[in-house]
Structure formats: C-alpha cells, structure tokens
Image 1 (cartoon, protein in one colour):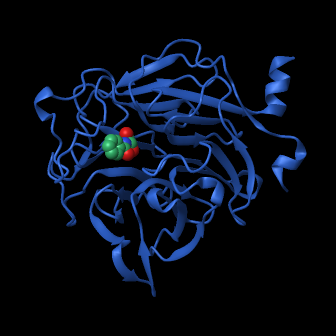
Image 2 (spheres, protein in one colour; image 1 turned 30 degrees about the vertical axis):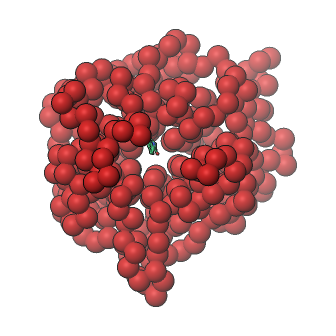
Length: 331
Ligand SMILES: O=C(N[C@@H](O)C(=O)O)c1ccccc1
C-alpha cells in the first residue's frame, strides 16, 4: 500500500556522520554486501566549466590523478571510515556500483573509462574499458561515461554512456561488448532517446534496467536482456532534471530518485522522491533539514529503507530514515 499514508516520512538524520569525512565533490554512492556505504568522491579535483574543452578532452591531465583516497567505505550507523582506496588512479570520478562479490565498478569522466576494482583494494584494476583521456562513440570508447550496473544473475554489466554519448551499452562479465541502445537509433519500433543517461538502477526481481535520463527529466526503464523499452516515469515535480535512481524490491518495489537544477535555473525544489515502481506514483518526498540540497548527485537505498544522498556541490553525504524509526531513535 501507500507507505506515506501509514505515517512514514523520510527525515534527515542530522547527526550523521559522526565525524568529518573530508570529502571532495561526492559523485557516486554504493552499498556493499555488509550494507556499508561506499562513497566515490573527487578529493581536491573539481568539475568546473573549464575542466573539458569542447571536444570533451580533460584539460588538467598535467596535474595528475587525485592523490587522496577517492573510495571510502563508511559504517552505516556511525559514519566511521572502515576502509579507503582509489588513490592515484582517477582524475574525475563519477559513478560507482558494487556487484555480488563486492567488486567496485566505477566510471571516470576525464579518463572516459570504466574500471572493475577487486576486493583486494590495493591491487591493480581487474578490468579497464575505454582509452585513457580519449573520448569516442565506437564499442571501444566512451564519452564521459556516468555509471555502471551489474546484473546479479548473469554478471553482465551495463554502462550509461554518458554526457557526450546518449546510449546504454551491455557487456559480458569479462567486458566483451554485447549490444547498445539509445544512441539516437530507432530501436524496438521506438526511437529511444536519452539526453545525458546519468545513473543506472538494476531491478533484479523484474530483470529490468532503469536509467536517469537527466536532461529529459525522466526515468526510462528497459528489459535488461534486450534493451526493449518498458516504461518511463516522469513527474512535473522533477522540474525537468533527474540525476540518479535507486531501487529496492521491498513493498512491491520502490524506486527512489533525486532531481536537479537545469541550466535554465531551478524549475522545482530540489528533493528526493520515493515512488511505487509499478505505478510510478510518488509516495514520499524528502530533503535535508540541516542544509539545502545543492546538487544531489547520487542516491542509494538499503533494504530496510535507509536513504543516502551524495551532493556534489556541498561535498556531503546525507542520511535519511523514515520518521517512524527516527521517532523510535529519539525516544
Ligand atoms: O553537470 C556537471 N557536473 C556534474 O554532473 C558532476 O559534477 O558530475 C557540469 C556540467 C558543466 C560544467 C560543469 C559541471
């Protein structure tokens, strides 16, 4: 039923995290198999208007990779750092996802590459796709790839590519290109168009893949196997920009998203949305009490409904729990 009517409402847990995580721009969030939060951030690198030329070539290669740990594993209750990695590898972190073996799958929009990082965090990447610093739109290049989602059953993985391509690419577990859709091509009797496919969410119980179609201000969902269009979810409250999506199978399937500011200014309040996946109905909206969202850039949700949002302008991660729990917690 409608979770909202039962008095549940997502509230910010204002005293989380317990300590300052020293974050740069927070670009990506993921959860590992222990429900720890995995944060992908940019340390002292910032994506500004001069970071790329109009061929999407990264302009600060000379300053080298980020020397701080770009990947932090954080305890969900206290927000304490449990582990850190990803030093001297990345220039402009973007998306991060985990798979059932707790490998990290990340994208870097300056390198135009996708990485699979193994559990031994100091070893070299297990897989690298794309050519460093070389954007492109064939099957061996990406152009500012934004996210990865891994099918927990087949191990196939999907890449949302990206700011300067408008396609979803499907690969085998070993990284062999299988297919793509959305690159403006008429596909499955429906020209699927993306305008910055920005974030991916795999829907395991339906074997569907959902895409935050950022500049079209909508979520598009597809049959993961074939890329066949299933549906779109779009609401005026999104205000024309959808930055990230996350999904949990609970309560019949819940989809979460965060909106963003368009280049035309802020057309709607910045907030998170909890939706019934089947109907697309908005069940709840949420935003911080302690500060305003500035660029809510990624969102992850645990099976028990705890929500984390990473903001790439305030360089913070915010935690939200349903008020029912929050009340218990305050008692
Ligand atoms: O969208 C932008 N950035 C975010 O998505 C991000 O930081 O990932 C951006 C676009 C133009 C110039 C500068 C930044």
